[in-house]
Amino acid sequence: MGESILLPPVARGTLMPEAERLARLDEALPQIHATVAGETDAVALQSTLACLLWETLPQTNWCGFYRRVGERMLAVGPYQGSLGCLRIDFARGVCGACARSGEVQLVPDVHAFPGHIACDDRTRSELVVPVIDAGGRLQAVLDLDSPHLAGFGAGEAQRLLALVREVFAAPGLVW
Ligand code: SME
Image (cartoon, rainbow, N blue to C red; front, side, top):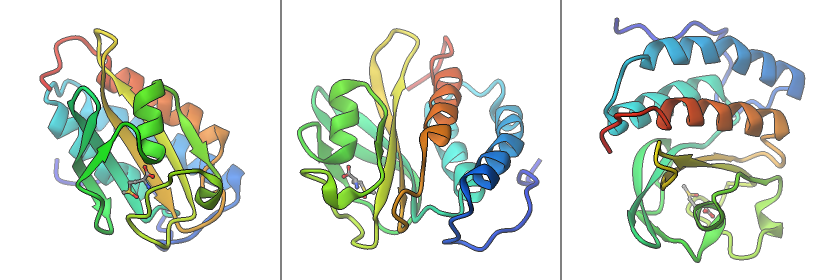
């Protein structure tokens, strides 16, 4: 315990070619699953995933969760990176679009996304994944931001959606 997952060191801010990014993510995912196995506290899970995905995805400048705190309101949860907005209405931004629709939002250029919220004006691309509980209710979103254009692709979207489904749709989680 206390040791992180094992991955080759890559400098923060690096955008590796897609095949290398996905190979790194595929190396990390079994280690991430093993680290969180058996945990039932949603904040412990969100904190640990924010930490380990931050290490796995060096192209990110923000990596973490917004939690649903009302019918149409998100509040910031565990994250790594630069200062995030504290609250996001479902009507606003990429996170709001994910929360409203329950669908993954893969945005290769945030300047082309109407209503994007610039918490950090270096952000150029985003991936936002819905976090849905065992009862089918949207409980949070996982937000990944990059200072690179197209910092994430369909490969990351598919893998992170599968991770989040497996971790957060488990029965008996305490939210
Ligand atoms: N960019 C996000 C807001 C969250 S922060 O950047 C951490 C959005 O448009 O939803």
